[in-house]
Length: 512
Ligand code: NOJ
Image 1 (cartoon, rainbow, N blue to C red):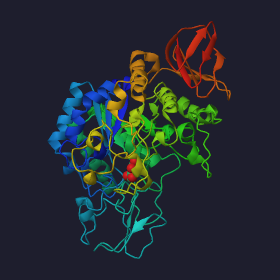
Image 2 (image 1 turned 60 degrees about the horizontal axis):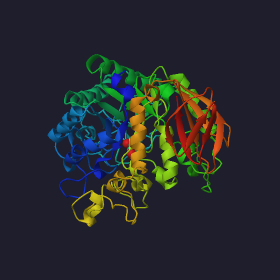
Image 3 (image 1 turned 180 degrees about the vertical axis):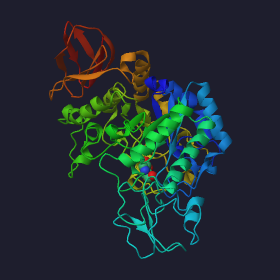
Image 4 (image 1 turned 90 degrees about the horizontal axis):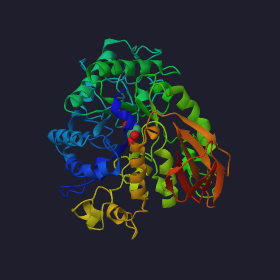
């Protein structure tokens, strides 16, 4: 386990929308470099950058055309290397986004694979043996290649599935996982990983990490074997490199060698009940735990979270996020006081927290037409709002040329608008992250346990030797502490007298 993860706090950057330094309307690496001090000042000491490689951008870059070349719109490979160096100077780490399950249909491997004549890449993707042969229920495309066969898709139509083999082979066109051509796919992906690690990248966020081997068993044994092999390579060659899975099942991903997995926003799971419970009800009813007076119940979260945390805490980190580029911004359903409490919780839990750019100022979800395969996700991908200047400081280009529009609201949140207000969301985030860095008991490893979870009462929990309490309701509440203690941090109002803690409306406290 890379030691730096113990006190890491990640900042996710959607590079299109972070900061544009050449006025072409789209973010770039130089923009990220210019803002590193801002990110460090927030308390984030690690970055996850969404795919920034050459791509036709039919899925925002998750359709990679060349894994070893950055997309010209963001800069050059040298610019990215400079970003690694500048980050390291500030004691920050940078994860790139690895997309191992599929490429763009314009990747040179796929172009070769489509050829009628057999070649090195014929089996790099999954093909049936003739144009009329069914793909056995897998999504596929036929009729577009000179080769007679249909090929499997991994996600959108633009994303042919790379071939890591089938765990259960039940058609002649399905290769077993130990077929040399399937091993070659795995080795090609390791070669891509080494390429950027050698240039200074600190690891990867792995897209659809569970998707590699087809017809896998329930435990994902086939796919897990590949990640165990990758982890062996990292341990031997790059022991400080970190891997986080987009998987959402830590009992599988962390046992397969990932250092971290995301607690993803899945329908009705525990995480979804914290900030986006409206997605769990057809009529939009919202009992999110952090929504004031909405009848939220922290047990809905705990019932799902705890077994996963307890089963995997020795293996790695099950990580909480404010949001990501696929999820509605939390501001869609929570106002600023509610967001403060939600972040207080997310940033004081075990594992490694992830802050999505713009959530620190409460950027809104915008209702926008789709861009680069974003669909409903597009509204969470709009430009970062820095100040009151043109395009809210994102770009000096013409508003009409921006990758996506900035929030048109007169009260659109900005960094400069919040910087000098001690009570702003931005400064609350800074205070919370500074607290986390100060207190080892709030970092990735310290034990978590629940102390009081009754509905209508503050939620009280323990991290190491600290006790934490949250009251999301609109009225004052009291609760009993396990022992008398002193309030060392609070949001809202908190008073400890003996073993009694009084928490004002929408308040949070850390007690030692
Ligand atoms: C998950 C990514 O987060 C998402 O943005 C993308 O569309 C799919 N994987 C396909 O790569």
